[in-house]
Amino acid sequence: MQRSKIKDIFAREQSGGDVLVQGWVKTRRSSKSVTFVQITDGSTLQDLQIVVDESNPSHEAASGLTTGCSVSVEGVLVESPGQGQKYEVQASSLTVLGESDPDSYPLQKKRHSPEFLREIAHLRPRTNTFGAMARVRNSVAYAIHTFLQERGFQFIQTPIITASDAEGAGSMFQVTTLDLNDVPKDAGKVKHEVDFFGKPAFLTVSGQLEAEIFAMALSDVYTFGPTFRAENSNTSRHLAEFWMVEPEVAFCQLDGLTELAEDFLKYLCGHVLDKCPEDMAFFNKFYDDSTIATLEGIANSQFERITYTEAVKMLQESGEKFEYPVTWGIDLQSEHERYLTETKIQRPVIVTDYPKGIKAFYMRLNDDDETVRAMDVLVPRIGEIIGGSQREERREVLEARMSESGISHDEYSWYLDLRSFGTVPHSGFGLGFERTVQFVTGVSNIRDVIPFPRTPGSAEF
Ligand code: 4AD
Ligand code: MG
Image 1 (tube, protein in one colour):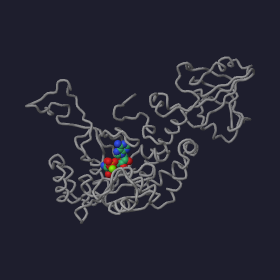
Image 2 (cartoon, rainbow, N blue to C red):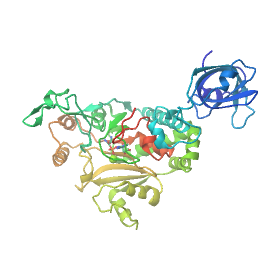
Image 3 (tube, rainbow, N blue to C red):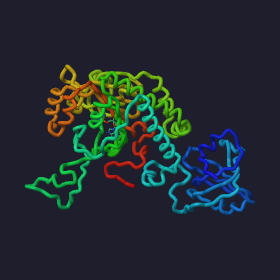
Image 4 (cartoon, rainbow, N blue to C red):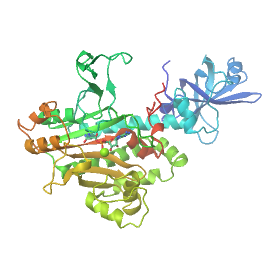
């Protein structure tokens, strides 16, 4: 017989018929005449109840089951008289596939703290929370591809090892095969020419610059993959390794990009509400009871659009005491972003036209010579979820910006070339995948929405 997934079993229109189900034991309770076993196979949040009568030859095995054991069950699907579940399986046979020592199995029926669960990241997918998180994460990834594919974007795979620093921020992990205990040097300087790539190489912070190459040929493209930042930020919203989706659109200016970002976020929220109702109800109940209402609100809201200069004015006139005082020219801090989207405007806000001094070299310079065509999308609870811009397509202006920012024209000659051979206005953004999962689930720490978080001082599993 073929194994049925528990999710598919609950989706059946009627009971009856033999089934084979396999999974892990959540709980077991036995009375004199019958044993009830709740099992899960991770296909859904719902456990399936297995009923094993005393007369069944498998009863002895069933009555010894403990949390975490794996089992294979054959039986008949029947309507469940119990509350809260549609069906249960009246077992004809139950086989223990793997034991689980109750004295050392770390997961108990009680709720565990997220900090404890991070220490046992090999078992946390067995919890309701982490199972729900993994399913929602999967659903968001699916929706990302679906949305972009349906709009005719081509998925481009950009390199993970790169020699270019897309953000020019210098927070990159170096990739080397040099012996760190005996680094070859010439007059005190590292001989990079004998390293694996013959020059310094790094883990990418963004696939944008390579995506731009393809946008200058295929028009609408996107990357979706892991990116790395060696920043020492120990916050609930930063990871050293995270995933980013980066659409890059040719023949598109900033206005078109803000439309795309708004449609994209609304689509992702709607998709998750539609495809993961059980998991979302779980997060809404146990994590943040405004999660579902927030997502529904997003789908129906119109995102606010303000300039950086207007944002600064709002913050200065707010009467709030911020840890970082606000003056024109500062980078907005999380507290400022959250004030704008949560308190002042109370829905997603797109802030545009930031001072050039705090943004990357590739953003298009405005006529005021002071601001660039940057855009950040801020959402409640998270702050910045998207960062993007219209790109500088004018070669001379780009060259001047690169010189100002100390970026080598030689090393980025290919990037400059794109501005010499058929340059066009183009724009793109990066959506943080984990911040998106954090936003849709209401889970407060970013370490709890990625299977194996990498943060300063921690790279377990
Ligand atoms: O604003 P960022 O740095 O933009 C870029 O990297 C551009 N090259 C994107 C582009 O235009 N193609 O990062 C984009 C998004 C942020 O808005 C945030 O959601 C997420 O990536 N992000 C992080 N997520 C988790 N941990 C970190 N350390 C992150 N840094 C950025
Ligand atoms: Mg940013």
